[in-house]
Length: 469
Image (tube, rainbow, N blue to C red; front, side):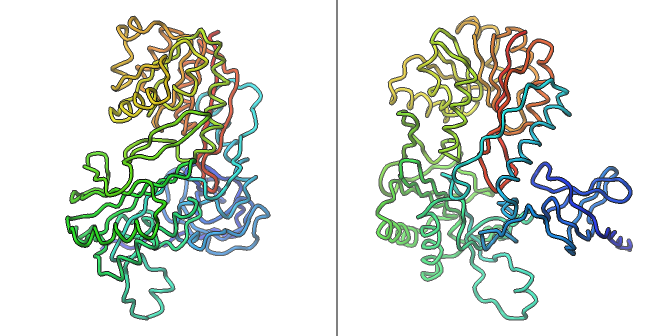
């Protein structure tokens, strides 16, 4: 039997930085980096290491000798266990500084890029209750805190509705109040949970693949419209209609009430039939006079207010005069394409998800925008010589790829046709830096602007303007 390794303890170590994936950084006496999850830069701590790698350690602070002046008191009662808002114990001005620094470091260290003077990061006006979409999961075996386990008391009710505990796919943290989505989000979620408990609706068990209540998706748009989609594991007409009727009676302001019967292994909705119970099958978002129809499967930036700021920066960087042909890559539901259309000659949007392109076409019709066209397909396949011949060489390319960045063939084709300007919007500055490094021989970086879309987390967007040399 293998002997269990004794963890290494490092004493009186100062936490010096905050890094990728929300982890903080310290240095071990041997010079290796230590990644931590429960500290703030400026803390002085004793650390117990977990995983030891060739170049770094992963550890946990077990004793605090000094608390950082960057610390603030978390507002959420679930902060210690949830893991969703990892930076809630750090002052917001410090969060912004570390996000801006991460973007700058990635562009320099990974991309080896020559940068202009960095424009300060754009922070959020609302640092809580900013998300327009939240998803919650049910469980009949909720996660127990260490205090509950050690109490020795028998816990009868293990039902929960909340978030998955990090690294535990079958354990759900029961959430009373989440500070990410405005009311009545918490009231609706708690009503559904309480109704389920009081009326004997079985909460889902992912190990046994049993139960009735599975997930809730809540959307609250900037126009105040509300969508609720409840996912049931199996058909039980009496129980599910009882819940849905009670919910619509309690919250008559719900614009769209829908449900799903999903008995498959995962709870993704994209391949599921969604059934309308009451109201419309969609809600509307609005931005600068444009309306966007949002269904249960639609993609839309989850911070509506800050998305508007991001899109204004993107449009400004594009420098449109009304005479340009614009390609909008990874267009999603065409929000950026339609947002810039009034300042362009024409905009061509491409997206791999067919449902998103259908939404984009409908929204363009709804908004009476006639100088946009949308195409569904994988970027590396669609963006070819025939596509360029059909639509004309673009003057400007706007690209907003997923976290993995652009496919190398897409980058190669962009370099081949060499548009005058490229605006690269990214939710992952590391892959953005990788892609930009492939373009630096032909393009100069004119501007770069980080935008905080998700306060209390480490996530950050970045917009870069490139011009042909």
